[in-house]
Amino acid sequence: MLINRRAALLGSLGAAAFGTAPVRAQDITFFRIGTGATAGTYFPIGGLIANAISNPPGSRSCADGGSCGVPGLVATAVASNGSVANASGIVAGTMQSGFVQSDVGYWAFTGTGIYEGRPKADTLRAIASLYPESFHLVASKSSGIKSVKDLKGKRLSLDEPGSGTLVDARLILGAYGLTEKDLKAEYLKTQQAADKLKDGALDAFFSVSGWPYGAISELAATTPINLVPIDGPEAEVLVKKYSFFGTEEIPDGAYKNVAGVKTVSVNAIWTTSTKQTDALIYAVTAALWEPSTRKLLDSGHAKGKSIKLDTALQGIGIPLHPGAEKYYKEKGLIK
Image 1 (cartoon, rainbow, N blue to C red):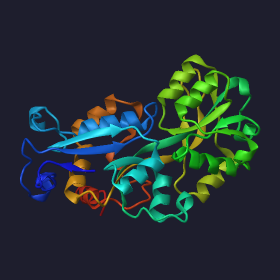
Image 2: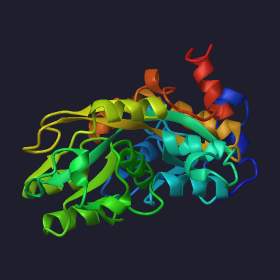
Image 3: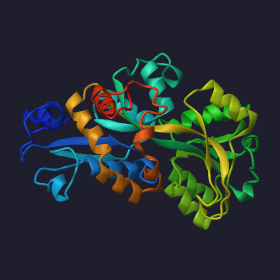
Image 4: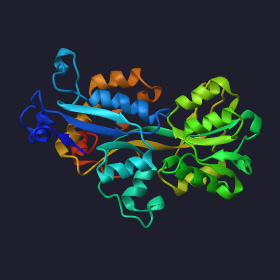
């Protein structure tokens, strides 16, 4: 729930853009960003963005070398169960924004795919496309798994219920002629799956994230693992059938002593809802693309370098929030 200490606060956000009065020192608004598990990529990226867009009352001005965030805004990155949970939280109003995979956002907005038969999340809106998220299929070297088809009969975690990873893992398996009945399926968070694989209690697991993923980096440092490619004719059919999928490559060296592979990907989208005012989201969008934010993104998590203004509108799949749309029109990204 958006918290205001003064009724005039939202009018004061984005003051330069909308001609309203400046934020006074005592005004404050809290803005939550739903991310994912703390061991993943969403959480640290969310922390960087939260830091960039925040400008608490009493902060030194941007011109004086202080925060260039939204005056009066205190943003926080909140750990969650991932894309599906974030989309639900935004629509329900329990969080102001969140990271959602492009496929999950599209299905939620249109009431199709995993949302078939459920109410459309037609209040969901995009702020920006952030970066590609690679599908990691991680297997222990001792398992002998070298392709998706080798998963048959193996102990595989498809990620936790409510996650976008689980949804897409099922699509990937289907593309290669497999279902959960062909496996010894488990449903674990990435960190839990990595721990079980390290202990020899699991053969492989799916995870969707920008590389390098912390939990996988830690696993690679102590346990012999392989990344399994998701490519070939099956992957080509998958990408053609579901337009929100793309192709991606995890390079050699992304994880210690692990060879790179070709795989598939979706985009990480920063989303919000129509419940948030145009003034607020305009100001948040502008703060995201401030030069000072660039420095934070480049010096933080490796995937932060992939967050760029010129790719901010790629593969979004849902409408932009009017506040964000106004910003991109001013920057010439929308004609």
